[in-house]
Image (cartoon, rainbow, N blue to C red; front, side):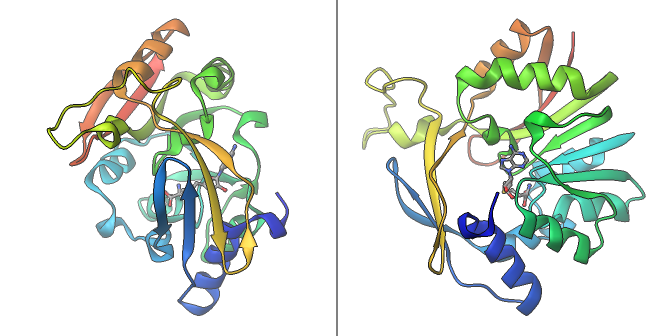
Length: 236
Ligand code: SAH
């Protein structure tokens, strides 16, 4: 990824350098304009949502932090004495992680990574990088390649069916074209505009069904307060 196209990387680098950042704006045809508070990308362990803390406690062996951002989970794991490899496609995020003390931070796309890990961690709706259900085959092929025997993948996501809820509380998904959790985002930080990218929110049942098709299973090990959940994916 080149810096001109990397609003989140610039936001992370600015916040790291100065302790503050401008607005990291998020656009999607499906939602009103939103923003990611850049500070949350630097959250310490005690400010992480409970399902993220649960995920960190469940980590063991050699750990891969996928889409590690500013490195909050990698740093928390290192402080617990764990061994972590952090990857991100943003060079600015990777440079920031190294400066913050992440021992093994690499500029690397998950889908082309080689290696073997006991735990693969994908947090903050980390499985979103799969982009669409049509890429689940490629995703599970890659998980199969990267996961050591007996290994686990821990990821969180949300069932975003609630965005289709009407005033009476009914959720009607029949009118939605394709899978309702497939979203397109674009980000902007100051004048830096990123390209639009697909992002997947997957409900627990659909994730479990795709895992089964690929000789894996997905167990829900924790639930959050708003349709969010933590899943553990292992080989069957
Ligand atoms: N996990 C971090 C950051 C989440 S933002 C946290 O919880 O705070 C998602 C991150 O994933 C971004 O930094 C983005 O650059 C990275 N990313 C997106 N696609 C990726 C891919 N294919 N491989 C590795 N990282 C990716």
